[in-house]
Length: 197
Image (tube, rainbow, N blue to C red; front, top):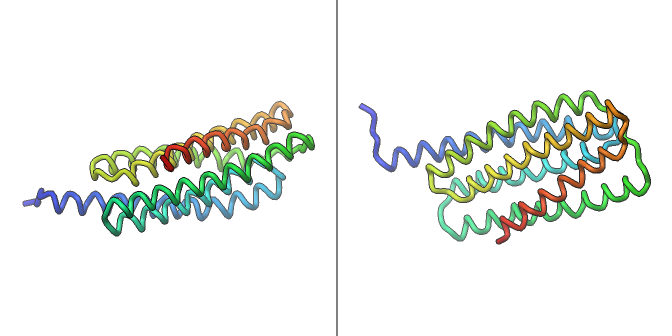
């Protein structure tokens, strides 16, 4: 007979949350390497920015793994603050890079590999985001729920980068690549404001 006590349920949910974060961490470590190669080959601001977003997601997953292994509201607040600060840094870097690319009229090379990777990443991130939110709500853990939102934003950003790369590839719209970088800036700042509040 299965024990349905709150302790067992909480323990199982915590393990599921940790599993989701480890899966996110693994995907983004691989993604960071893939995106670094693709961004250099295509000279793409959007792919470089998305790679940096993967780096932020690696940091966020690490923070959540740390938080899920401990307890306390102070630990949760610290975890949310660290994730928020990381997003501010990402937004500042990408804002400068995107504006320089637009002002210099930098033309990224079309990237079929970038289109394929961002498409698959969008599906993976949306799936992980849904599972994290559901688990975080069941566990009553605002850090896991917030990081699920970060993962969802990561999926949206993958779609934005995908659209920018596709427009550059299919229509020759050189400005779509840095414009996708500016979309990441907007969402990064919005997420940072939410987390730091």
